[in-house]
Amino acid sequence: MLASELELNEISEESSSRPDKKLEEPRRKKMLAILRALRDAGGPMGGVKLAEALALSGKEMSQRTIRYYLNITDELGFTELVGKRSGRRLTELGLEELDSSFATDRIRSISSHVDSLIFDMSFRLRSCQGTVAVNISSIPAGRLSQAGRAMAEIYAAGLAMGQRLYVGQPGERIGRYAAQKDEVPLVTVCSMSVNGVFLSHGINVSNRFGGLLQFSQGEPRRFTHLINYDCTTLDPLEIFIKGQMTSVSKVARSGDGIVGASFREIPAPAAPRARRLSQKIISAGLAGVIVVGQPGRQLMEVPVPPGRVGVVVLGGLNPLAAAEECGVPTLNRAMSARFPFELLKPYAEALTF
View (cartoon, rainbow, N blue to C red):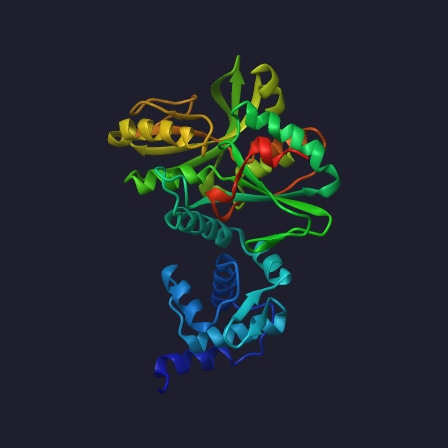
């Protein structure tokens, strides 16, 4: 079947200049959209699947246009052909290109990525099975025992997202991320999993801030720093960890200090159901401390508008923050992927070396 006149014009216009890395803004956005789709797929995709994935994200492209841009990304080394049936996959250079893309594009990408991550979760409280949103981190293999002791302390104190994690083998690939041969990958539950459970029970959650939560005498008191999710290209806790602004281990030992947490909002009528769900989520071993506020009242000194209720959830990267605090370097990728909850191990088992 012949392509439509519109498609032919589009290809003609886009192929009128020689492909290079300095594409005009509209063409660059299309290329980045294709790279993001390949990244989020976690594996190779052909033209048909790419077109479907792009359509789901609100970006309609014909297969002819997709093939044109894939030729460009191949030439630039951003993608590589795996096979005619399998399609193309993203290369490390392609990941670097996405990481260096325009900040405003990345903010929109993070927002849509989080929405997709939550919507596609399959975890169910009754069976405690299904996929949850996770963070993927890596640490030097030679420092695993040291990091494990620090992390176990945080899990034991209830300052992590739940009681489970996955510790991989050096060099293991998890999703689209591959650890180096001298690195160990770790999978921790992302706090966005709470959003996914709430959504599956009819509660829509608005992500407001990631921040630092001050504890005093073992109780959460107030946020000392906040970063709006709509104004950052990184997960706030990643920033705070690398800025050495946490004292999670101190909280675990003395009850006083600073931990990573996030602030969300839900509709006021959903508050009673959210409180009941929070207890079930904690009992399932999926989450740590969850505080559901009162309608229109500030929570942890954060204002809440009328008709809304604040929700505070502990950060999933708090165990990695503890590792950094004891001198173990970490590489953290928050909100990275979905991972089967049943493959996560209790921390006492996973962190025994």
